[in-house]
Length: 116
Image 1: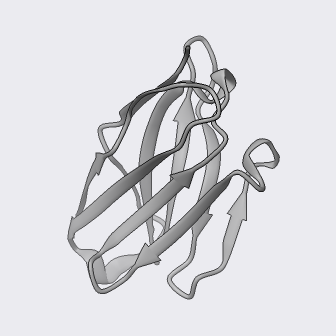
Image 2: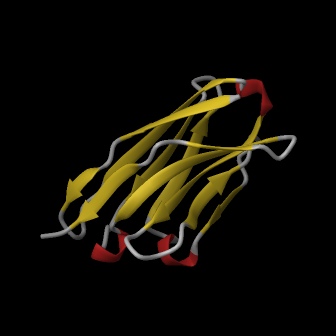
């Protein structure tokens, strides 16, 4: 079993930046892909970005060029650097880990609010 703890959310003005962190514990050897999803009020949860253990990444079209995902396997941590934030980026951001067997773990979520 994998436990995920996110940090780094908060309130930021449009155009600002935030960095989210997610630390994994437990059966970390089983983790293949880690990623970030978000869910805005009244909308479905959607993929923001994810990264494999080897470093391959993919991004939602809406964040390409503004967000960057990275992973420190030695620290069991995944990061999401968010730049040029927009009000539409306001959501609860969830860390996600997928094991090699396909089991999916979720963090508790961290609120990101982009507002002036």
